[in-house]
Image (cartoon, rainbow, N blue to C red; front, side, top):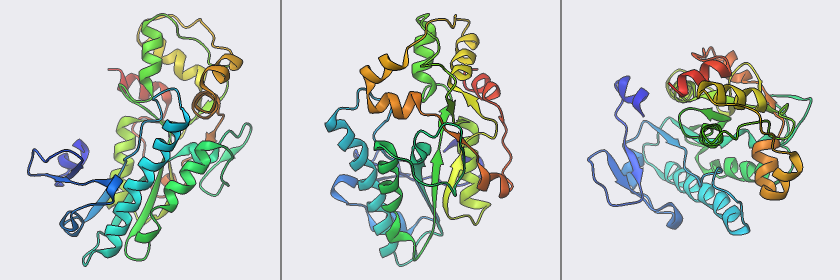
Length: 279
C-alpha cells in the first residue's frame, strides 16, 4: 500500500471489522457481502486475502479454512466486479507458486502444468474463483513465491536462527522460489498500471536459490550459526502436507512473463532481498 500511496494513488481497504477510517469499507466475504459502491468507485482491485499458510499444523479443519478463505474472498470480489455498472479495469488476485507442486529438475514458467497434491488443487480452485470477472475486467493471477521481508516467509527462519537452531531443511538443496517484499509490491503496481498482462504471472526473483542458501543467509545476517539439520523424514512426520508443500518442495520457477513485460527487479538475488528485508 505504501508504494501505491507514494505514487499518488488513493488506497481504499476492505475490512471485516467496523470501519475506523474514511478509506475503509466493511465487507463479509464468508457471507459474500460487499458494498456495491466499493467496487463502483475503484479503478483497480487487489485481492491478497486468505488464511496464512505459515500457521502450523495443517489439520483437516485448517485445510478447509485455507481453501474456503481464498474462495470466499475471491468469488465475492469477482461477482461484484461482474455486476458493477462501471467495473474496474484490472483485478489482480492473489495466487501462489504452490500451483506447480514439487518438481525437482524441471524449469517451470507460466506455461507449465499444474502439479499434484493439496496446494496445487487449492491454487487451481483459487484462480478459478475469479472467472466471473473475466468478461468485464483484465484479471491477473499473481503467483507469488516466498516473500523475503521482515516477518512473512522469513519469520520461522528468523526464529530458528535467533534460537541457534538454523540448519538445512532436508538436504537443503531444494530450490525455493523467492521474491523480496519491495519487488513483490512493485510487481503488483506494475501489473496494475504499466501492463496489459492477464492470467497467471509468476512473482518470483530471477535468480534461483536453494532452501539451504536462504536459511544460511538469514542466519548469517542475524549473526547466528547455521548447523542443525532437520531430516526430511522428521519434517514429513511432523508437518505432513505442510512440510512437503512449503519446506521440501523443489521449484525452479522463472518469472518469464514479468521479465518479458519489462519489469526490473530492485533485489535480483536472495542475498540482496534478505539484506533489504532484515535491515
